[in-house]
Image 1 (tube, rainbow over the protein chains, first blue to last red):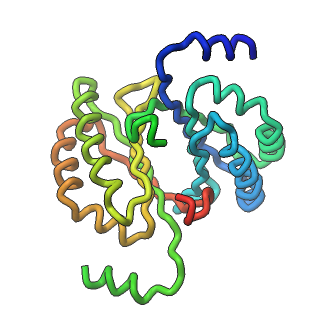
Image 2 (image 1 turned 30 degrees about the vertical axis):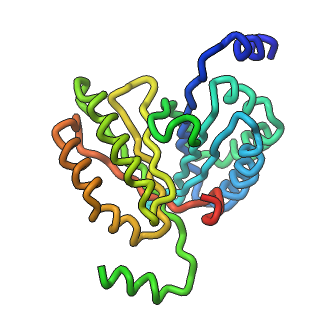
Image 3 (image 1 turned 45 degrees about the horizontal axis):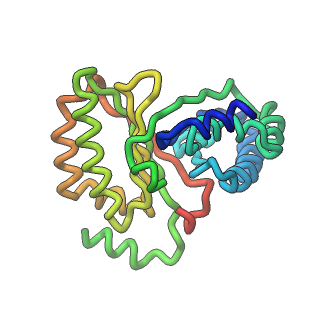
Length: 117
Length: 117
């Protein structure tokens, strides 16, 4: 945490938003329970100061597939998210629902401008 | 167009947001040109009344890969987007830049609420 704070203070440049798409496939019988747990997690996550968006979408042609579209204001915010109680609760709740391991893809922001998120 | 307007007028229910992720891989030498063309298209697209978001992100571990995260207020808005001059310009400009065919995945919105987009 001390390292994190220091890194922030020493950095004069505005860091770029970091976008993470988390691809999830759940067991068929877990679709509604996953949706409910992810709604709760998303509602808490968007209250974190380092999180600009935390969208949850469900694939139309395969409702067992979801993507969490997570937009962080900087890299530190991703670490801080992992330390929250709501993240831990979500992670433990959905673990047995997974049909396959989650896959995360990291992106740099191109549009909109960082200030517009 | 008449059909579109009619469908909107006759529909009493609030339609759900439609989210489309367009996965793109461009030729290495086209990364910057694709980014520029997509920025222009995104700036115009977010001015369409039926479009809530039109984000462009670039994959960190493979900068030739992009995702366009397009959020439409209803299905009609996707058709209307395809009729715009900026979409036609983007489509024609980026066509020779593609390393492989684009892949679109359609999603239903789970979070945030439709009104919050």
